[in-house]
Amino acid sequence: MAVRHAVPRLAAMPVALVAGVVAVVHLVLAAVPRAWFDEDLMLAIGRHHLDWGAVDQPPLTPLLARLADTIAPGSQLVLAVPAVLAAAGAVLLTALMARELGGDARAQTLAALGQCTCVAAAQFGHWLTPYSLEPALWAAICWLLLRWLRLRDDRLLPALGVVAGITAQTRFQVMALGVLVIAAVALTGPRALLGRPAFWAGTAIALVIAAPTLVWQAANGWPQLAMAGVVSAENSLIYGSPLLVAGHGLLVTGPLTLGLAVCGLLALYREQRWRDLRFLGVAFVVLFAVVVISSGRHYYLLPLYSVLVALGAVALQHRREAGRTRAAWPVVAISAVLAVAGLASSIVLASPKFAGQLVAATARAYHDLPSWQRERTAVGANPYVYAAYLDAAAPELGLPAAVSPNRAYGWFPPPPDSRDHLLLAGDPDQLRPWFTEVRALAVVGAPTPLGTYGGLVPESTTIWLLSGRTGPWTDIWPALRDLALEP
Image 1 (tube, rainbow, N blue to C red):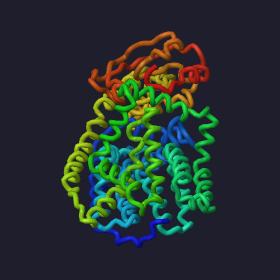
Image 2 (spheres, rainbow, N blue to C red):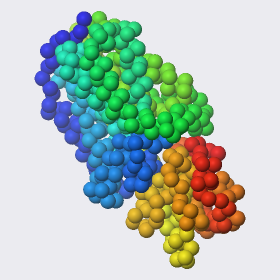
Image 3 (cartoon, helix red, strand yellow):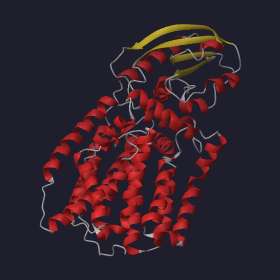
Image 4 (tube, rainbow, N blue to C red):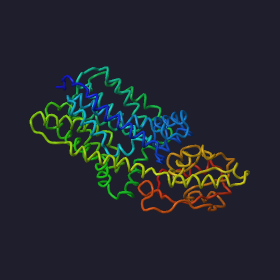
């Protein structure tokens, strides 16, 4: 049977306070100068290569980056607004899920704090990336599911499809969630959901919304599927073991988030009143296993924690009502301290020091070229991280859009054939066979113990000038395309 309780009143004041603090803190941090390569890539795609898809990116986040850059060119604060709204929205939706489950004001507030103090969410809540938008979108999907289970109002199911489709235009991982939810519902119930025509109408809506980017992927050889192997190989280089990737993912949730999630997961199987919700636990466990086995990114599962956090907060309420109290506030305090540490670490991780040196040196080398040569010179980088740095700063420095054979850039158009020179930041080895002269112009940065991207992208490199191109770009570019950071 469905959970049919009347929901308590929304704990508007404390929940709004928590969400408001999240929004204000992230807005303040968004004003701090930064250079985060994933955000810069979204900006580069939005500015120069907006399409129905990219190698590993559906188009929604680049579209938001383009809108922000159109409204306020060069403003990192405006660029971060969608991410900040998503961070605050995830807090509110987690509290609303606790309310749907019968959570009182205390449980709703605890759920909001559980989402608020997630260390990883604190790190990326002011960077415009797909994974900064996902927690709010997945929380909206789960909230609509919980609301349907309580009300059995089929008007919610097409809305669920709309949100799922929009989420798929943000990151493809939600499709795996959808498949697992359908399979888990068929296995554990409530099977009535699968018998609703509105559910399948919602599924069709989601597929229609996602269709353009799926068509783009099909037309370009499904590079997103190839990225799974690339990610696994990169994680092997960074971590050495899939178990360490999983451990990292658990650590960056924070003690309150993880504790509530575990409590909620266990409560799904202990509390008979929640037997219709057990499909959520099945979906999470299977998705967790898939991420571990495939050595996926450590943050892949973070969007699904919010519903488990809500379940855990209400499960603690049930213990409290049964007289089995256990203080959660010491954990809240520790988690808040760790979340603040996560916020501080985001400033270090996105330090613009090296990116600033790289773009300044590249711009200086470009403008130092004789005018006749500058007109015939493309600007590029290898790996794509450097290209994203260049593109983010290109308008202010008078640089053309960057090119690169690496990752998504390899599927962007090559330089025009009128550009027979290439000013390159990074590794020139792939390109050497196609040029008669490769000359070093400048050295940028200094070796660091970690570098960027888990050490795969060093924060030191050389600026090169490649001359004497031996073939047309249309022949060179397909031969150079490479998804991996490591050759």
